[in-house]
Image (cartoon, rainbow, N blue to C red; front, side, top):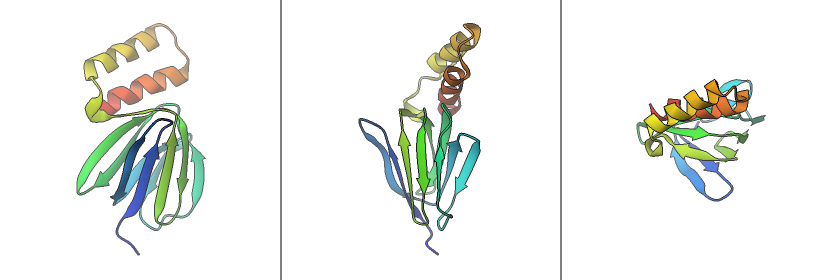
Length: 123
């Protein structure tokens, strides 16, 4: 069995990730999917807001993803996202303010999940 799998995370306007990884945690609609090389094939919708994590080159990386779909195959995982942000690009204070505003305003759960994902990815 291979030691890595090819992970691609693609948005409408750009590719966020295109690299070999040893593992990935994908925020699917009904819970996280842990993906290792050789994983069984599956398709799933993503949560409206969640944190995708993966290990590449021995480093843990985080990406806030906002809706989309994932296709898992034995050696490739493709994640098509509506939008995404790298955790390193997120201003934690602004993300927390966005979450507080969404919660106080009684926003729908999707908006609250998106705001929470940004806070979690920035951590």
